[in-house]
Length: 141
Image (cartoon, rainbow, N blue to C red; front, side, top):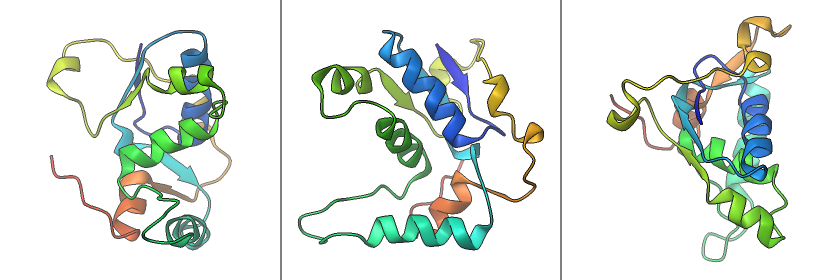
């Protein structure tokens, strides 16, 4: 199953992907950098910056700074991670920046409930912007 995350709400895409993975599907998410988080930019940055700074730099916990990894970590939070079933399901999730060559001609589905146009909130931040604000690497391409 290929999911296009462009102009989608990251949490709703993650919830849908987690459910499908637990049912045994292989889930590939393309355009992960174009997924959005709703809310004010200041509030979102404060929340994720606290997650990045938490812990010890030598021991962890480590929080990702690139947009595809942020989305994958969000999906992991929706899986029963401490159970082997959740860890096996997590191996079936792949997130990509942009559209890789292997998915170029294939049909990708959009999650209807995750469309940012249907959201009541007008304020949002894309995962690519968040990644740059967290001092992660910028995606070129």
